[in-house]
Length: 331
Image (cartoon, rainbow, N blue to C red; front, side):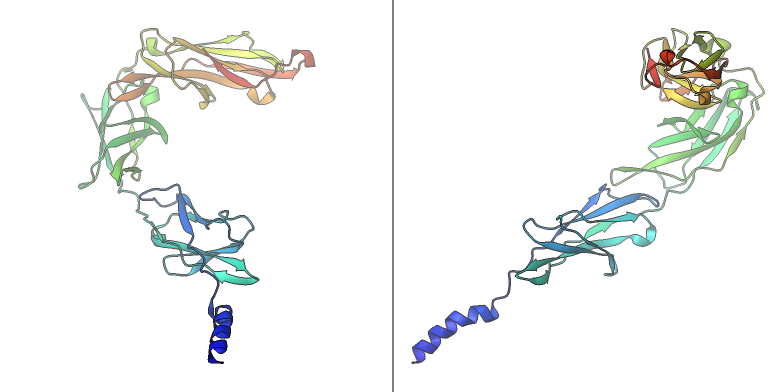
């Protein structure tokens, strides 16, 4: 009789005390994965559950252990948490998920945490200039990183536009009086765990050259328009061609409208480049110029801008004159 009771208990006991197998912990993936982030950068955390589970929801946890995001989905591995890097968000992030088994909702184990490191931008450098004789061209601008900061690269900007990014901390102005005059700033880069981090910009430095032009007029490219115009109707096609001196080490041509770049080549070996506007619209009216960049040891130098050419759009052309396509660069 005791044996029968024992056998009966062995059949019933597993049903009473065997819980469902625990859910495997998910994995958190960072995208992009960086050793360190700077304020303002955006990154995504994804919670990936093992396959085969009937996942109903996911949950993320911040460094303080607080729930920061919940999303219900029927597709495993879909949910994400988008963060904007801030110094107050440094720490470990993790996630978990819920799944249904035999009609019951079960919580998974917490994932292994991922560490998010955020550092502030490096301190701004100082910027200075000297010339011999004073106030004449050429002028050398120097960007000095604060003590204790090992800079690997320097950026120089004029009126907020990048002029050059180079290993050296000095820049000799190679522009004409008109083009070189204006406010200058600089910044530098440091390496943090293999990632390059750019510093805050320096205070502006005003440069006004009074000496002769450093770049002679022969450095200025020539711009021509075909057909010559200058008046066209909407739908017409025109081509702007920029030609530079053949002895310059050109790296890039750029076309500008009212001083703003509208098209640039990536890398060129030819002495000229063409910019085609396939279907002129009223918005294409304006003054166009071009320029090119040349390679100097350790830096890139921008040429003078060409003399401007005006394009005026009036009326509409017959449909048969319309050209398919908008704009293109041709060699």
